[in-house]
Length: 231
Image (cartoon, rainbow, N blue to C red; front, side, top):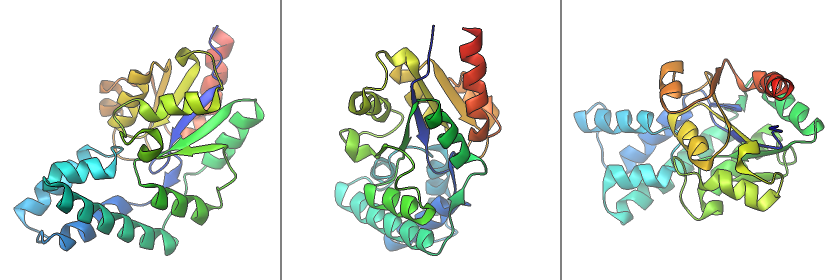
């Protein structure tokens, strides 16, 4: 029987609504590196950013700008711009997200929040939402050895750090991007739920391995309850 004792949830687009702030912050980073807004180069880069939503941001910039120095400057500009937008109050919880987390926790499950952002940005989001004490553990790529999604490292780090379950089969993962799905599948989680409140659509999420696609993370407690009842 599967009992989902560890729930690993993505943040932006899954539990947090940011209204496209990633693209706005990318614009600031591209400008810092001399990429002209409206140019073909800018458009190509923005397409890559959209396609790789969920990936560690420094990894995205390494791909876009090539050498490590330029990638780090772009990443610093991105994090600075995103943090400023968060500070302006431009993030909010996805409707029902906090309640879903609290419901899952009340059932004795361990909930972990993960992100492709750097720790400073993740902490800014948590502070803006008043979520510092919402879950026992939050993870960014640096907390899991530096590799973000689509690698399974953050999901497996959640397991190792919490000891919440005895086997990867009892992990549930939820996210809004194809990289969230790939990360969950590669970790061995038996429930990998895509949500339609963020970057990618149902077809893309299913194609990346989603076992279920939900309207939002608010539906996750009910899904888990149904799956456990049927097991």
